[in-house]
Every structure is written in C-alpha cells, then in structure tokens.
Image (cartoon, rainbow, N blue to C red):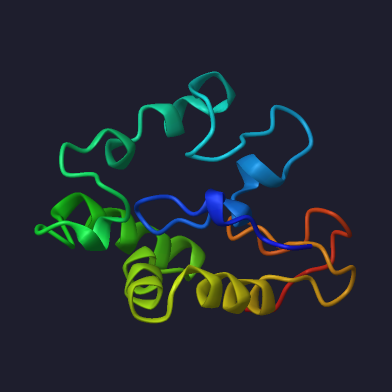
Length: 131
C-alpha cells in the first residue's frame, strides 16, 4: 500500500498511519480533506488553525512551539513516534523520503497493509506487532 503525501499533517503527523484514517467505518480522510470528512478532534486541531501556518510547522519561526512539544511528548510516550523528529526528517530529506521510510517501518510483515501508529497490532490481520 502506498502512502499519500496529502495525508501528512502540518504538525508532522502521518495521517496515513492514523486509526481514524485506516478504519472502515466513519473513515477520516486526513487534515487536507474537506471539513465534513474530518473527525471532530481533527477539525478543531490547533495546528490546522494556527496563525503562523504556511505549510509544515518546521517553517514557523516558533518551531517547535509549546503545543507541538506537548503533542510530541504524548505521541512519544503513548505511540513511540515523534512528530518533531518527523518534521526534522521532512525538512532535511523531503516528503518523498519520509514516506518511503514510513512505508518500510509501518507495513505489516504478515499481510502487507499499513499499520496504525495507534495500535500494537495490525487492524487488518490482527497480528501483534513487536515494537
């Protein structure tokens, strides 16, 4: 499964890996989609509405801001993923390279589908993923 560039959020979240996007029912189409297709938490997202937003957060003079640091800490603690690290990688290596790396890291070795960063198992084949 190929990852969509349009599903990388300004904050560095790869929405290709989000359970809201991967699930079958009430599927979210990512931050770039129309407001009616977003989960409520995503449509109210601070980073989507940020006054400084002109692309990715790394382009902001306040990068990394306090809110991004808090979000990053939550994701590092709960999901072993860093949005700030993602943004540094995108800035240095580009979006294509970032997504290639993400595909290698988050492809289920059992069924080949994309893994959710929010689960410790593949939502498609139910195989437990070792971190």
